[in-house]
Image (cartoon, rainbow, N blue to C red; front, side, top):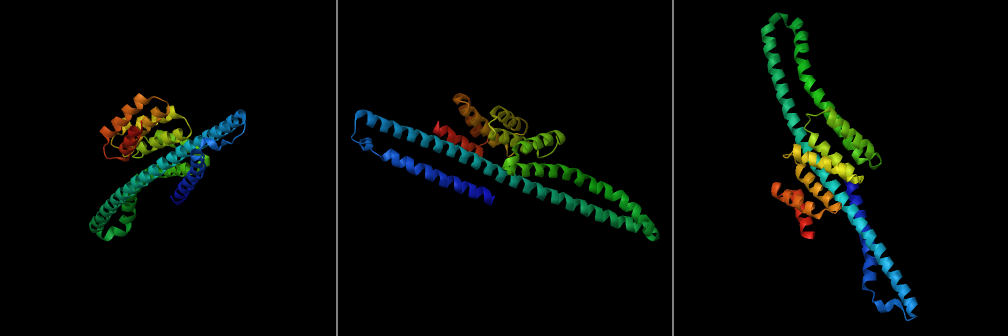
Amino acid sequence: MSSNFRHHLLSLSLLVGIAAPWAAFAQAPISSVGSGSVEDRVTQLERISNAHSQLLTQLQQQLSDNQRDIDSLRGQIQENQYQLNQVVERQKQILLQLDGLSNGGAAAGQATGADQATATPDAGASTSAPATAAPVQGGDANSDYNAAIALVQDKSRQDDAIAAFQNFVKKYPDSTYQPNANYWLGQLNYNKGKKDDAAYYFAFVVKNYPKSPKAPDAMYKVGLIMQDKGDTAKAKAVYQQVIKQFPNTDGAKQAQKRLNAM
């Protein structure tokens, strides 16, 4: 998280570096082009205009990069919160299992009496297998998901991250991480410029997991893609739907900002 924050600060500093000369050019009066011939002054004006255009292009690109970084940070924060909730729930289940095993072991000890020494190994074999089966199965899905998240954080392995999440959604169709995995597939494809693929995964999250914390952001991203593709009418409709269906969420707030700017 600290490296992402430093990257964000660097991006902001670049913005300042870009905006400062642009502001200086914007404030310069046209009379500053000199007092030479008409052709010379026209040439100078064209040079200034080209410089303005280049600076504006750089500024727009930097703003787009910063927005992408902010979206990624927001997604990571929500991801961490979701994983924390899952860890807490898993710990509760483990404690309940341990409590059940302890009570079962005490009852078995009272029942066997003098034969406890020979009965204990068999009892251990019969009770320990069910206790370990569920955590191992859940651990596989959890470790595969975390491995895919680690690939997301490595900018040089984004294609590997996409492949990892695609394998995950096929291998663990009943996993609680399904909405998150599909959301990341949408985000990763969006980052690579594959907007149609991204829209598919974001829409999949909204349709199949409307109660997931990822659903509001996923629907907002669909609207963003529509706007990127120049379909203003559809983008507005999607933004309005986000606000209506998921009020008071980050996705709804971002959608409102987009509507206000359109």
